[in-house]
Length: 311
Image (cartoon, rainbow, N blue to C red; front, side, top):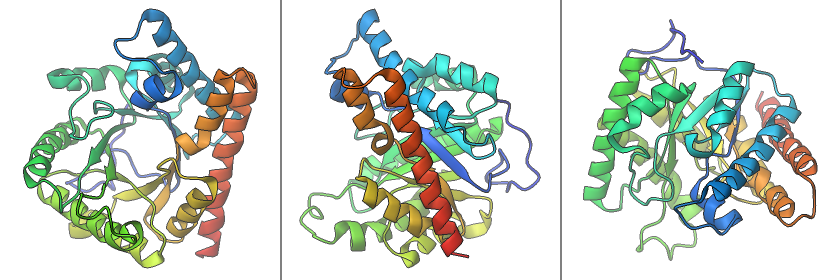
């Protein structure tokens, strides 16, 4: 999908016009598919690779079965196991996102090293996605190294007029792990601080993919951080973090009431159980895809219900 010019994009953040709603089904997981779902250890054989690809096709078929509007639905899938899916999605006009990071790493690294730009151009996604673990109270040298790499990526994407989707995870440091209220009290503030620090380092996402928060004020603070300094076209979506259904729905309902949050990217909670039962021959691929479609549609209903309550 060629990225159109946007008259509404800020000079810091050119790219696609931001949709009013964005419901992404992410299945770009690589390490968890290889190890967690199949028990494989790299390097994978050709047969093993095909098995992982088949599992991702099951998820993709679930997305297609849900029948979500092209104006709001989208997928996030990797090049390694999903190149054919990305190609098919392009042909259908589906919004796509593709990761640039190496999977399962504590420190951000490019999946394809110095060749990352060529791979982005070849996959031609609507959004380029990165997953980054960044705690402002953590290793300062690690944070600086990551920020420098990400600023370089951000500069390239701005020049190429490709929007950046930034998945921010703020894992607790050793000193923070014992705090019973880390998720509810400490992490939301650290997320705001992390956004500020990354912006100051030259990282300019058009879309922040963030962990859920339980209070309206915390969600509003994230929007304010993402949009500070004239970044008015920047938006946020909620990730699922593999949480149970009830927790994900609570996060979605809180975020949906705050202008600036436009949707979600919920992956494992949508498809993991269905894929495990398919792998165990308890259900067929078609049944697994149908279950994934129902789960994905359920998140959309929860988010839109939250938006209605928020007025």
